[in-house]
Length: 116
Length: 116
Length: 116
Length: 116
Image (cartoon, rainbow over all chains, first blue to last red; front, side, top):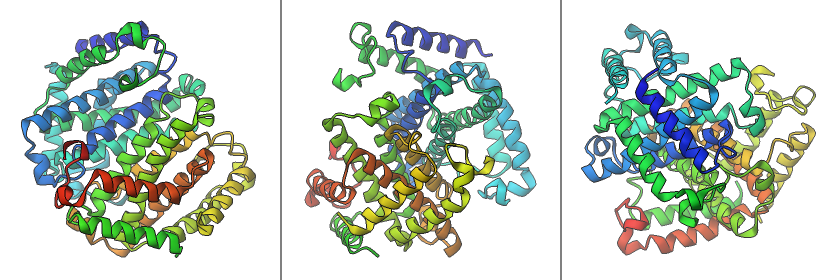
């Protein structure tokens, strides 16, 4: 596993322990919190056109960055609780996605693999 | 930035380019897709008790791992599009959270910082 | 269709027209906004135990009511844009759910119908 | 309260009771389920352009209608558990929104009221 990610997960563990928050951090609750943060991120984009979202001013990008960070922090805590190596899982899923969406059939199409 | 994460982001970029999917991958759309994946993750936990979520059988944990992976893949793609270093943003946000939730006031409480 | 709901949808239409917001209210954007509001609702429950969520003080329930309302307002606007009768759709879906979850097999179980 | 909505809520109550599902239907869990359904709805729109979302073929609209229905079913169940009258709450919130977004300042702008 990436040393960087392990270090961040260790810091998150210490953060929760110092605050006696482990009682709240069940996987169920962390998954809910992750979903809430993902929606807070989406809120920054909901009324923008796609074009505007591709050209956000620096200040707006910094706000979005904070929400991306929250998403990552909860995803890493949840992975930690579930005993999942996050980067391993991500690489493995990317491989699965490659099988679900073969280049020749998926090219230029946003169709879901179940209907591809 | 972590070499591991950069490598994964490069693989994701290649994955999208090969499929000519960059037209679909506006930050707006990636934020929506991230939110959808976070909800698919939450679905695995929605009817479980917290206790059950702390003791998931290996098979269920593997299913959850796949959804955590999808969340990470979209978060990393979105960070890439926005020019955000994801680990830097995460460490910075952890620091901010430490200020919002000082140990002495936050200990043992799940109260939001705005009401702490 | 229910007169009450039609009246509310008409008020929502007028609200958006007065503000020249129809340009923002594509079904895509309304679906994102609905998802964001549902997450804001979830935020009120994320750290509560189920027991606590069954016994919320009146003030907290009033806050949750406001978020339920936002969810309804966007759901009704989206239904309007899509030309869907919301109550008809709801009754029809309840019927479908009855077929997916027959009483004798679903009783006392939270298993998804695909695995029932 | 609307007779139609009360009738639907009564049917939902009977549906859950017959299946002994009340044990799972804490407000916390219903809020999570609502969020999951809202995301399933969003999934239908995530890769569409706004223009495409305004012109969905009938078949796609019917699929979206089913997800709108699921959102409503959970919102009505949650309102029922919390002792909230959903239409009252919706009308009240529409009034609040009118104060947050006065016509003269909000016209043609998607800015959040906190920055308006």
